Length: 60
Image 1 (cartoon, rainbow, N blue to C red):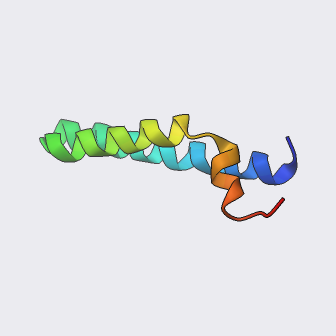
Image 2: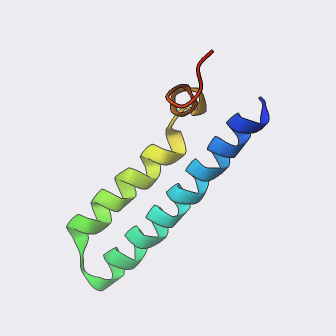
């Protein structure tokens, strides 16, 4: 894995953790729909393949 792939993976993890934390806070405060949406976004970012995200910005 080259440096650009690791940078993309690191950014995806950071955004995923932020979305999951916001989902937790929204769930505590009563925003169940918002919490579910943020949780799905966070999980999607955690499970997103790095090569797919990287392919849009880098030509091979």
